[in-house]
Length: 399
Image 1 (cartoon, rainbow, N blue to C red):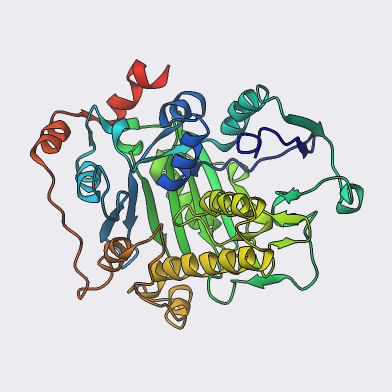
Image 2 (tube, rainbow, N blue to C red):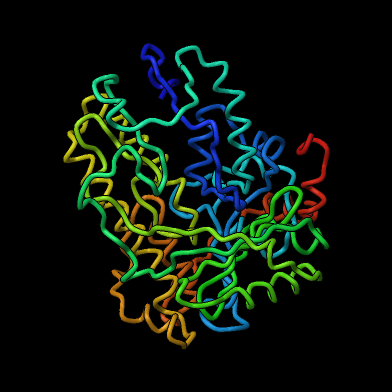
């Protein structure tokens, strides 16, 4: 906001006891592009935020145990480097030296370290005033032209009556168990992509950070999954896991009916949340901020802002549901999704038709996996590249 509107005074109010979740985060390319426009590059995230590269997702067992499929970034038309190139990198773990020049790559990072790094950048922006305190809407009334509520699931500023549409009837996941541990075999555990492992009552993320691997079991809390999660962690790291080291992160899935009202706009978790499977949480933040810019500039009315926000959320939800609906896994948890309606191939900007093909081909024989030619020079660069963990520890990337 401050960079977009240098002539406006921005007051940033947040509690002294701010407690970010920090479970190990991942971005999609759209969010990385947003950060890059703010002057935060992939290299900055790797250096300052315990970051690693993310060039796509590997889905393990989502259709049935023993089967995997990859979903590389770079989908869509006209990309400088296409999805087939990134897919080949995912399959070989060979990182070409020019990987940071690829247009559609992204990063994993540790959330609270990104916050600390951004604090150092904010300190140099002249039109921001920071106040460390907790406030209510009544205290803010009549003070500011526009109030942005980014207080998370609590919706402390925008908690309007009868304004929430729950997703639990479609996606029952409402909780994640989380665990982090230093690498015990970095060559095997640190990959340039996220690995999502299907489980009896949800799925486990594997997010490789610079110094450790973060894992989390996304599930519905009607099922007791702690024993399964501990067993998975112990096998992953070859250690004995103390139950007290397992964290629990509740999630409220759904969206507001209205996201902007009068001079208050809800952003982030205060506005909407689906679930972590395609890392859309921060995408919905940056997308909303772009939409808010159009509203401030007089290009959108409040009703248009709300409708566009809801349409985007519902379309992203539709794509995420496809990851579950067509699975051949067969128990009470997975059977639920077979009753949920999904509109196949409903395109949106971040998930065009090629994205649908990559995901649906992991489940259905009637959908063919996209195959694009990789030019000769790219093949040579990949073949001559380094193994990923070697590339990541290279001093030019991490110091």
